[in-house]
Image 1 (cartoon, rainbow over the protein chains, first blue to last red):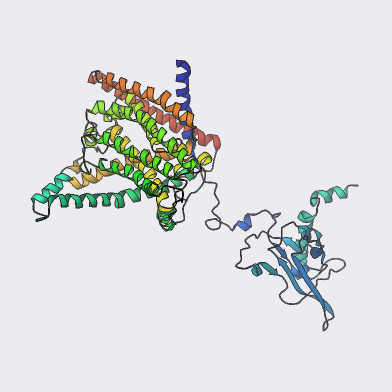
Image 2: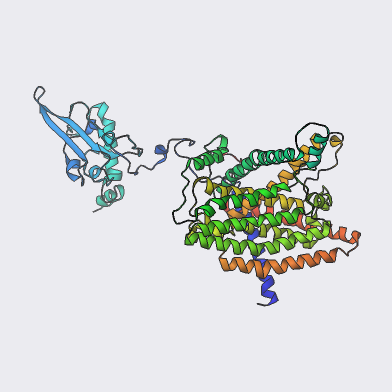
Length: 189
Length: 398
């Protein structure tokens, strides 16, 4: 080690420390990256999540046809559906429609299989509960009639928007090969 | 303080009480007041502030939930640690193991005897004040080595050994840097050193000549190493030694080590302030005439702010520099800092023979150089901001 490299070492140490300290000091007046979940944030975190976010499953019972496709597709049978014939009205109705959030692994197979887009992932992810039974979501607390799709499109104004939302969900997110792009390719022979 | 007590005894305030008993009670009382009113909150708030400053420098928020902006975090941590189980490993040397934190703590707390918080606010103005500080802080090595050995754990022992080697090595550049000031002041008394300086930066020993300017940074670096602070915290390097000599400690005993570490930051700052930055010297304003209380407060605040500035710099260095290796640490000390400290010492001796008017010109040039460095520094900070174009947030709270 000669004198020149010795002096160079000292100068480099001082210069790099000086530069490093200017960088850390500049961070003092930068906004921190931290999002202070769950409070101290301007909007609930669920509203900032993307639409494709796979949160806890939700079912729109008004447009559920009771085809049981989701129950069959579920790899871990976290969906249990009961349907029976109502002897008075002569119509089939749900006795229960339960999804066990404990078991669900958020694979999304049920929402892909659904013909009306009734079952889908929401942006909700806060599932804490004091006991496992609290994590079972009951979507049919009272017996409820099945939805019957009409030929030529839905006419009931209460259900039109719901059907549209379900189909939009299917088109954009739930098709296996990526929704919109695949549909456009299909149009071109 | 002794003079004040003697005056009280002479006035008959403690009639019929032996003089020694009065002294003993006063000593215990003074230690209690210093420990519980000043040192404990100071170390605690420093621990909180360090976490906040460090977090902001890493684009985080830091503890901000306990109390306003998290300022009571240290109380919560202290209570938590008090309530934790006090574990002593069965293979450990129980007596040494339980004694070690107190030895470390004593080595740090004894320095408060000679720290001059103000013109009259000092426990004892020893005529060997700075020498005494160097002596009692060496007690920390004994405590750390004791902790490392008594834990009967390879990480603890390695940490203790490293710490001993580090502190013993870095005492040499620190002592030599302090020696430059002792040459200039002609005394080792803390008050004497402060009185040899003035209130303005041009009268501080920091800008006395270029060699004392360099000696200040040598002292600060060596003091950081002696206090086991990052970048020299290899005795407790998490990535290699788990937690070094505190690996086996839990609860309040664990806390005592860190209490000493954070309190030690203030000691480093106040020694640097005393030696180089003019201590408690305030400008001779007209409002201080015939108003000793106001003068005392002003001196205390001046000293505290100057000392705390260096506590902040220590936090800042911790957020900036990565930990050095053991061999780098030793190379830095023995190959660079010891020779440079000798150069500073000899240079300062040379400056004792320089005529005073020439010396004043050189002092002004040193001060100008320091101001230029500060300006360049803030230009660099502005450049970093312009370069990264971040979202700015000026407020200290979030």
